Length: 172
Image (cartoon, rainbow, N blue to C red; front, side):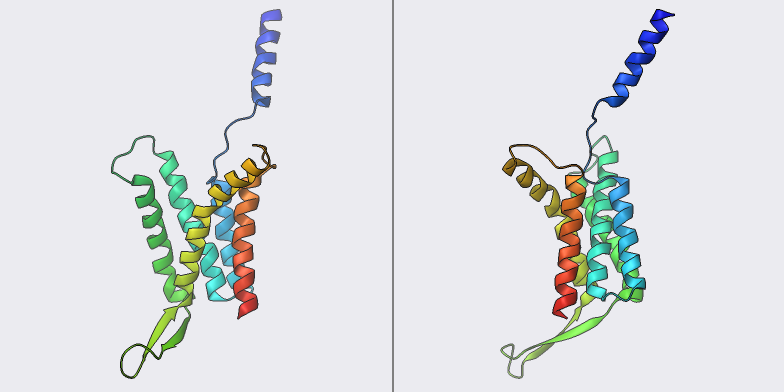
């Protein structure tokens, strides 16, 4: 009986030990997707929605790359992130795209007008921010002597995405 009790106590103690947390977990990935579609339903601009969907797509690609235990091709992690981005953003462009024009008077004899897809630009910004967030989280931890806040990676990522979207919405 004492052996069984010791075994159960040991197993319970193992459950209390901290485990490694990954920056791109399913919860973060699903959260980014839910926020993006919620923003679109609330009438947020296409560039801000693009930020969240681009972040969602890159986070999903990085998360899938972590699931693969073996590297099959060179730069597999980056390739999966780009593939996920392309297969998420490109099909959604027909539903969420919005365009603006920029006139460049110094280009050519009569100038040139460029058409810019705001949703795609927002997606690229979101993808870059999701790639920067682990780096910024590590820098924050180093500034605190190696200590991390609870859920620091998620907080840093969400703060970057929301800040970028707020700047874009307020500037428009």
